[in-house]
Image (tube, rainbow, N blue to C red; front, side, top):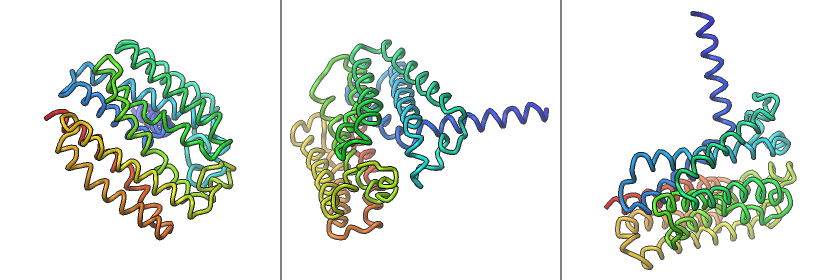
Length: 298
């Protein structure tokens, strides 16, 4: 009995470590945007089968891409205080190639299941993985301050994947909700980079807030947040039948708070104000897609 208990404890610890290496705090929100896209495309409640398939495709694909990114960035993570306690820098998965293999398996599962949905899901899934892992992590992140602009398209992929999984066609609506995520990513990531700019400088990562003056960086962050707010409200004006009053009633006050935090950071670029904007940006995006889900149901 004691031996079985010890084996169970080791298996539980190993599962926890492998779960952590997927960076669930990063992918959960992107998966939620995909669920929003699925409800929007369905115009109601999706079938249980479709919901489960989309969920597995999005989780395994996002988690697999993040796991491979963790493997590719071990050297960076060891230098940054914010990331040095991740499983790979701590040596909790050894050799680290096990994490790489785990990530490849997750992505393979995602792509195989995507074929059971439709070809559009496969296309956007592969596009998102390539954009994140190859274009952003391998090519752009260490070379250009515009790195997150190249990688932001991967962030929009789950939303459109959920949409095309429901509709089996490419439509403007799918690109619109993907654009919401693409516009959200720069202000979210740049706020984090501004707070931890010493970390990024130590790892020699040329994030925009590192290369520009603090004042210019704050202006860029505030500008992208403003663009996201304008775009989210414009959706109601463009098509109130799809993005209705419930959508507007949730998105508008949340967007006003985002604008307030952005303006506050613009006028007073303190660490506290940077962190407040960063912490609110994720709930704001979640509220937008929650509004899309509720509107689609009603």
